[in-house]
Image (tube, rainbow, N blue to C red; front, side):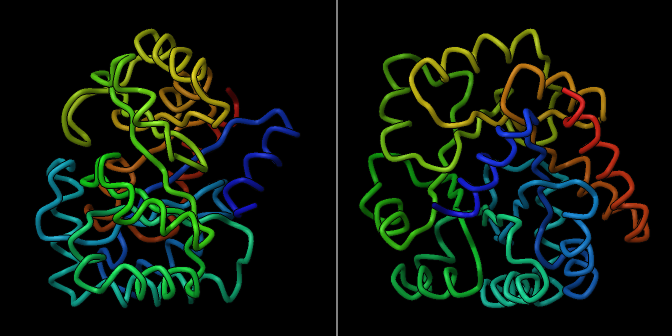
Length: 263
C-alpha cells in the first residue's frame, strides 16, 4: 500500500473528501518553494502535487508555464526537485507526494535511475501527461513495479470506448480534468462534472479527483461534493507569482482545503 492508498483509506474512514494542492518545484526559488511545500499539510492539504519544471509544458496554461520558467531560470532541475521532496520527507513521512510533469526529463535521466531516485526521495506517484496508455511499458508498468502509483488523466473527451484503456493500469486515483483545454483556462462546474465522475466510477473502484478550473473555496466544495476530492493548481501558483508571503499563500491554500473538506 502506497502513502496515496493509505491517505484515501484514512479519508474514507473519516467520511472526508480529499484536497490536493499543486505547486511548482522551485517557484519562485528553491528555499521559498520548500517552505511552501513544508507548510501544505498544516494548511489542510491531503496530497501534494509537485510540478516538475519543463521547457515545453503543453497541457499547462500561462500561469503554470510561467511558474516553470521562473523555476528553470532559478536553476531548478529534476535532481533539485527530488532533493526538495527528500528534504520534505525529513519532517513528514505520511503526506503523499505526486510528481507531475512530462516525460522528457525522466527519459533523459533514464527510467530505471529515475524510479530508484524518486522512490528514495519519497515520491509516491507519478502523473506524466504526455505518455498515453499505449506507452505503459515505457514508465507506467516499471513505476508500479517499483511501488509507485501511476495516475492517469481522464477528460471530457474520454469516451466510453477509450475509458477502459485509460483505466487499465492506473492506480492511486483517477485525475478527472474538468474542462477541455489547458490549466487555468476556464472554470469547472459541478453540474457538468458530476455525471462524468459517476460515469468513471462505474468503471473503477479508484477514487476520482477533479482538477482544472477550481479557484475558490466555494468551487472546491462544489466540485468535491460530486467527486472524491478536488485539485487546485493555477490559483495557488498565481499567489506565488504575485509575490505573496508564504504565510499568505498557505492561508489561501487552507481556505481552499476547508472548502473541499466541507463537501
